[in-house]
Length: 211
Length: 211
Length: 211
Image (cartoon, rainbow over all chains, first blue to last red; front, side, top):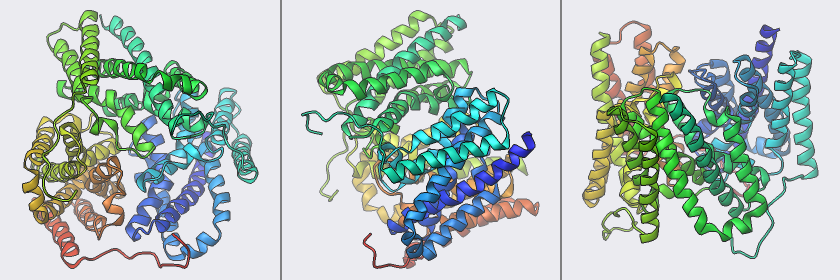
């Protein structure tokens, strides 16, 4: 079962890296970066969350600098946004769908890898969330934006749900492919619901203070 | 003696995490982030310095993603600032006192942990300072501010003094609880003196050049 | 041969740290930071790339917090820019030459260290580039600028060439001092050519979209 899960993790990783790298490339194009900048942002957005995960659980060198398949996926996504960006931007609604898919597979794949590394359950959940949101945070910090996860509608919460599902299933010794894919679908649906209904996390009460 | 120091380190860590997480939560509230953003900033400010420390000395997974007591302290501080922020802001002078306390316990606890990991003395000093200022740096970078430690009155210097004291005591094989607490008090007093007297590190000479 | 390369690596590291720390100190002076801020920026610019490299290949604690010779070089550069900054700024063209030298030695030294750690060739190349550009990225993020490597003329590309040369030579079991120095000179010449001719990486096509 472990082997199957490892294979599954590669597929999840490849999909996640590609769609997140598309988002990074698009941000780079919008900020008028050159080809190198667009590729770096694609790399950071696609692989940065995984690098954080691997540093946190001690799997060095991280796959983001050692697995040529993942790096190739990120580079491809960067080149595609660089050359086809008007096309990619036109389908930016579709990109939000892809982004929700990336969030789903990264949260689940991150928690899955942490579980395989036998860290404690609470660590596996946190690591799953970091895997899912870390790349986007690095992407935004590099171009001087406050990271979207800190201000946008529910983004980290579905990732948390997905990571929790995986870790719980592992604790119950019931970590099957079905459970893994169900967790991916769960995150995707919750995230898309938040996008469609424009759901947001609660904001602090306004006070009379100047900001 | 080592065991006692380990217990002592937990108390120092809990206090430091809580007060630094308060500072992170307040910054989040001021920037009008939502609940998730406020919690993330509390987590980053409270636990980020320790995560840097643990990555630098090779203790993975870092306590910031594995010790539920520390994570609970950071979450509590985030929730408190989220719900009670007008109250917390009104006592912002008190928060500066808490922040000085956090600086003191983190510099000392960081150096202490590095010493227990048997890194070289110079590394232990640097790691202590990074533990103390790292969380605040991440907090400020995430919301797009130049980190306070780079521009505010003396902040890193008291942390350096505290870390030096711990490392020196360890070299002289005199690392007792008394020495540890004295180092904490030393950092706190130096930092509060800098706050009260508005002491600053020297600035570069102005020149005729445009900035 | 390995020993010779290790010695060689130290010389390369010292030169790279010093010139990159000069660049960090200058940015700090320009941003009107105080002495502590200037020293931190010098440290980050000079040692940050190496810290990233060491975390990625698992060599902890990283030399950036453990090798006093490198830290001394970074501090010296910080103090020099702090006290002599009008002089340093006046020779800012010379600083660009130094920066090209730093890029060259860091890309080569980073790839060299990665090869000595027996990581895979593709990892060694990426790690070499990260070593060369990482410190500058951290420096710029800390003061709220979009990193120069993302937007300036060809910067990462010469680093890539240098890292590739070292890794290729190692694969062919031909990693002599002559090859290492040739790689350094290659990076330096390509980078200086880009500076002098104002060569840039291609930019994305403009579209009718607002930015």
